[in-house]
Length: 437
Ligand SMILES: Cc1cc2nc3c(=O)[nH]c(=O)nc-3n(C[C@H](O)[C@H](O)[C@H](O)COP(=O)(O)OP(=O)(O)OC[C@H]3O[C@@H](n4cnc5c(N)ncnc54)[C@H](O)[C@@H]3O)c2cc1C
Image (cartoon, rainbow, N blue to C red; front, side, top):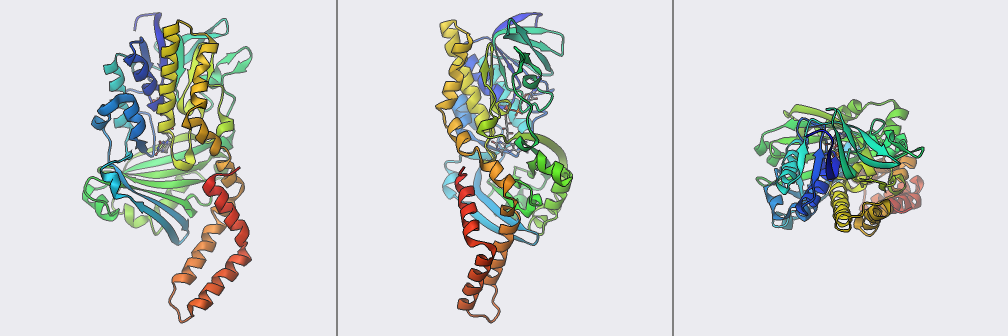
C-alpha cells in the first residue's frame, strides 16, 4: 500500500462481518481495502463453530459450495446434565441431507477462503496489518493508522474488529468527549474456550451415530458448566472434534473458576468421556463472546464510520448464532455504503440508513426477543442446577423397575415436583424457552 492511499471504504478485520462487507462493496465496483492483523485471515479467529450457509449464499452465491466446510449438520442434540446423568433431546432430520442449512467449520480454513472471495471480487486484502487507531479530523473518522506506519484514508471506515474488549478501536476512540463504545460489563461478555481434538473420521461417525461425511452437534447445559450461565459443546468436524464452551465473565470472577477448570470438568463427565476417548488435542483456543443483548448494542454508525458483527455486540448466544449476524450486518453495511457512493453523500445522516436497515431486519427482531435471555439465566441459577437435578430424580423414578406400581411412581413424582415448586419450575422453563422478558 502506498502512503496515504484513499479508498471508498476501509474495512477493519477479515472475520465474517468484515469480509462480507468487503465482498458486497467490491462486487459493486467500489475501491475497498480489507485490513487484517492475522498472518492470514482466520489465523487468530475462534468459533465453535457452526456456520449457516444461507447467509454465505447471500454474499457469494453458488460459490458457497466451494467453501472449506467440515460436515453438514444432520442431527442436533441438547443435553441437560447433572453430575451423573444426561437428559437428552435429540433431533435428527434426514431432510438436512438434501438441504443442509448448517455446517461445522474451522475458522482458520474458512476465513482464509472467504477473504479470497473478497480478493476475487476486487477488494485489496492486506493481512499482517494491525489497525492501531482511527484517524479523526473535525469530529469525523477519515481513515485508519496501521502498525506498518501507513495512514489509509477512506470515505467510510467499517469497524469489524470483533469484540475488542478493553483494547479495541471503538473503546479507545473518543469523539466529542464520548468513546464510540462504552466499556463492557463482565456480565455482558462470555469467556469461551475450545480444543480441537483429532480423531479418525470413521470413529467420529461410529461414536456420534453419523453416516459417512455427515455430522452432529451436542450442546450441554447444567452441570456441564458447573452451574454457571453458559453451555458446553461438541461439534463433529471431518477428522477432528471441536470441544468447548463458556460462561459469563462475571461468573468466572464470582466462582474463581478458570476456563480450564470448566473444560476439564466437562471432558471428565461420564456421558462425555467415552466420546472423546483417544482423541488428541491439537489446538487450544480462547475467545470472548458478546452477550449484552439488545441493550448492549452501541451506536453502530457515526460521522465517517459503521460498526458490524461482534464489535456491534450483535450475537444470539441462546441459539449459538453470531457468524450469521456478523455476515448479515456486514452485507447491510456494504449496501449502505454502495448507496452513499451512488449519491456521493457520506454524511452521518446518510450512513444512519445502516441502522434503519438493521432495524428492519431479523437481526434486531432477534436481538430484542433475546434481550433478557442471558440475565434470566444469570439471575436464576436454579435453572441450571436445581431443576436438572429434580428432573433427573423424576426420570429415575419413572424408568426404574423396582417393584412399585406405576400409580405409586406417578404419585411420588407429582409429590416431589410439588415439594420442589412445580409451578415456579414450569413458569421459569416457559420463560426460558420463549426468552420472555
Ligand atoms: C467459542 C466460540 C464458539 C462460537 N460458536 C459459534 C457458532 O457455532 N456459530 C456461530 O454462528 N457463531 C459462533 N460464535 C460467534 C462467532 O464466532 C462470532 O459472532 C463471529 O466470529 C463474529 O464475527 P466478526 O467478523 O464480527 O468478528 P471476528 O470473527 O472476531 O473477526 C474480527 C477480525 O478482526 C481482526 N482484527 C481485530 N482487531 C484488528 C485490528 N486492530 N486491526 C486489524 N484486524 C483486526 C481479527 O483478527 C479478526 O480476524 C462462537 C464464538 C466463540 C468464541
